[in-house]
Length: 208
Image 1 (cartoon, one colour):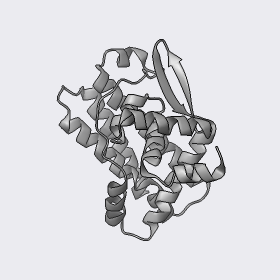
Image 2 (cartoon, one colour):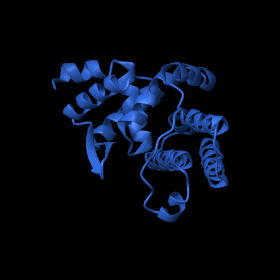
Image 3 (tube, helix red, strand yellow):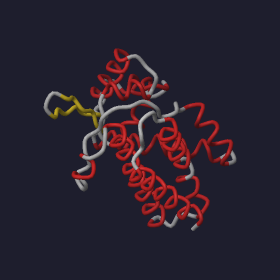
Image 4 (cartoon, helix red, strand yellow):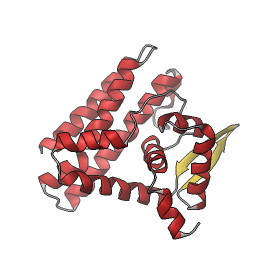
């Protein structure tokens, strides 16, 4: 795919949302992405095909399930998109920035199964698909928050710069809280505790 076509791809809302969501999940599949970006399954598969041509994603199989995940290049693009989002938010107050971001990014809803986390296989096996999905999101989100804060400190970023980089993740936590509140099935206490821990971690980074 030419550079011009790649540029056109990310001047559209749905491909950008899809890539950011794949980055948040770590590994997911097309039907979940389709629900997440509020798109038809056919349109979602066309977007993913273009992303694969650009070298942004790769498909893997586990049994009959076809998963999608970011390539190393895709992770670099995801980081660049988030940095761009932070730059846009720089000229606005935190409240205004979150409102604008909310208008651009669909609320995270929908259900879907995700691969079990390797570090705690027994715990994930005991959870139903919805609980396992939310726990996976929380762990990926926490990992990204820790990684961004670590890099920012290493680079000697100011407190304001760190706040701009981490501020948007407050909305990601809020979206997970909303998903838990709207869930029709019972949410395990492990999930709410993990989300609370991530929220407190982010708040501590923003205060430091």
